[in-house]
Length: 115
Image (cartoon, rainbow, N blue to C red; front, side):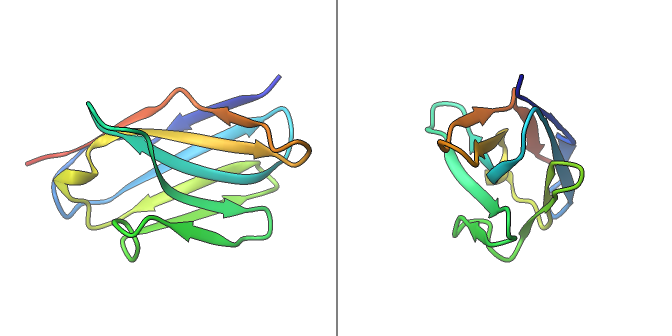
């Protein structure tokens, strides 16, 4: 059974930092990533990382966010620096299986950037 368990969200002031974690169980995944969804908006890609370490970032977060993964722990991280109010959203972990590229979602973790 596949489970993605996110942690690390919270309230932070503009310019602050947060680190999100997503621990996966059940199998190894080819691509793991983070998406976010603000109220009334669609869910968009924030960053993703392949099994080999290749990364891809949304333009809005490039240079401020860093995605990484620990394959031994089957965990993906999102280090978020220089946070802005527009980064406020529910952040979701996503993982795709090696065989069949089946996607799974975590339950989401709220990030609020406000003074």
